Image 1 (cartoon, rainbow, N blue to C red):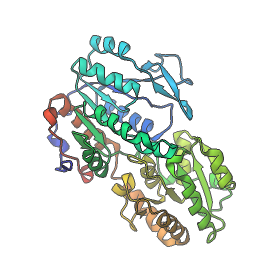
Image 2: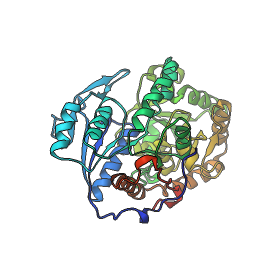
Image 3: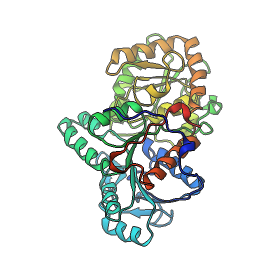
Image 4: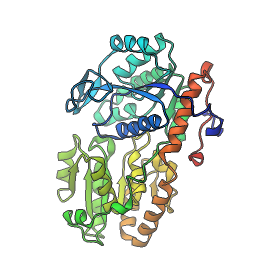
Length: 409
């Protein structure tokens, strides 16, 4: 059975003035820089702006101030294999149970399904606290990129068991909701992701930055932002870049991010610019100073970088799924290749590099489309889902209707 796609109006939800005590549990959060951490930070900030008390429970990062200095509840963690600068939360039932018994939250929201998230789920169920969750990362899909495809089924079974014990699981796209529904996930709710168009803005374009890349004002610059890892399919982007350079030898490639594939990619494209991980102000300027955004990944649950690129006024080439599928009208505000069609991805990117008139038209339209995904409306929808969970509206398998993207305020 496909997820119900009946529209849900924010006005039909419980009154916004009801303030909640919400415990948000996550394995990743700034100062880590990745799509999950930055998106979750915006949700937490938005809930606090709406008057809710948010208790953030997360692992402490090695680079952070001493425990407690941030006001968050910081737990023990361990480095993630291949990403030693990131922490994985350790089981924490003994810490969480007295914490939530003494000061009971109205709701526990679990953003990640690691050991810390599992501990939070067990404690919340024991204390009969309503729980909502996010499905944010395709761990089951990633396994095939690291020679562990045999793990896909057990990982999916674990994720299904995890999320089906919550009142509802929020997913960012209808397509993902349908796939998870077919895999046995229950009580799925579609809530899209947002982008801050005040931060990501074409007005931040810097000719000084472009000059540091060796780019003149009329030189096309191809940008990609994300982890430099196998699951992102970045060798395909390098291949498309090499093809496009046959037509535009002055084309520049800028890769923002870091990860285990960096040295391999530098060998494939020694003339490319590798910036490493950037703080948000510098990241926004890099977006705005490019012209095209190539995104070859097919393992995203959403892909926040697509919206960030659109908000920055870039011509986007991506695959027809996740954020790109939800927000790009092909030929109007971006270009989409069919899933698994590498040749189409290369062809579209080469065509866009060659066609300056099309590129300019897509850049203008992409910025306009991104403005529809503001965080205020999306935070209101998340708040509404949480209030319905607290009220018991999701009990006994009842499914919330999905929220139509066009209803975002």
